[in-house]
Length: 98
Image (tube, rainbow, N blue to C red; front, side):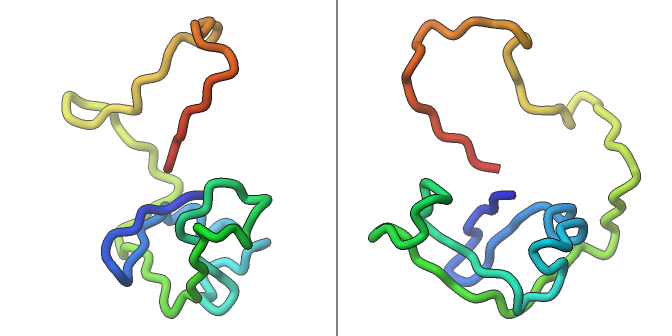
C-alpha cells in the first residue's frame, strides 16, 4: 500500500492496509517504516529516499472494512480504461500513487 504525505509529520494511508497486513505488523507502529521519495521498492538506499519511523497509527473510529461503498453522484471509483484497451505508447512510464 502507498500513502500520501499530508504534512511534515503526517502520512495518510488506507485503514485496510494497516489492519489486515499482519505480515507488516498490523497496527503496531514499531513495526512500520515510512519511505519518502521512494520510486522503486528494490532501491531503499537511493539518495532520494528518506526513511522515518512511525510513532502512532490512528484508524478512524467509523472505519468498517466489511461495509461496501455505495456509488452516488459525488462518490465514484477512479476512471479506468476498458479492460482490453491497447495503449498507444508501449514502453512509456507512468506514475501511480494510492
